[in-house]
Image (tube, rainbow, N blue to C red; front, side):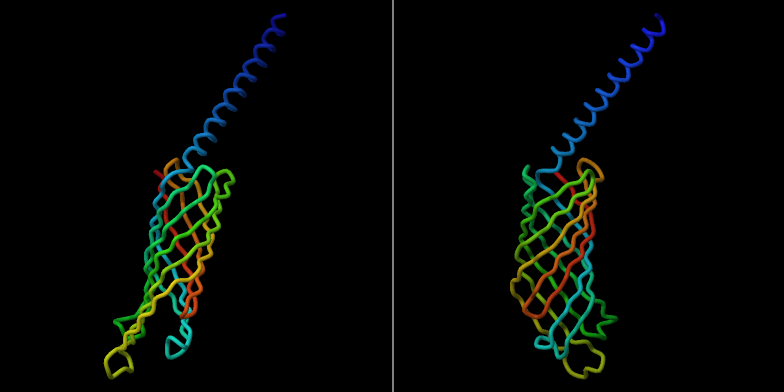
Length: 196
């Protein structure tokens, strides 16, 4: 009889523990869902590959640029994302000896977040308003260094990857591809996304 009561008590404790764990898990998931929408700010470091056509430069140029970017926007409860980007990147030129290229843009993007536990993917589409500046290097250039400037707007497609760190922060990696009048450029950004 005593063994039977102990067994019943053990089963009851296990069921109660399971119920409490399920409630806590549900509350955690609910808390995560509540923290996925709202305003956000995402600063990051940028790597950009510039492919400049020969009709803008004297010859076709393929160069790498590095810089900073910041994104801000709002995510709705439906996981629709409206985002604004600002970016600046410049290639490396030792003492100005080689040609220097800098690219900047401001972009408006629409996206949708697909979430799996602590990982999210966000495809983006939008428009970028860019500015490309080139300055001729001093090496093998006896005259004044020529400066060219070109601006325009182009479509943007991209994909973002987010990893949950805390209720207010995510690891943020994104890749965007932009076709431009001078050729094309891509932007790889790595940083943090802070939610408010």
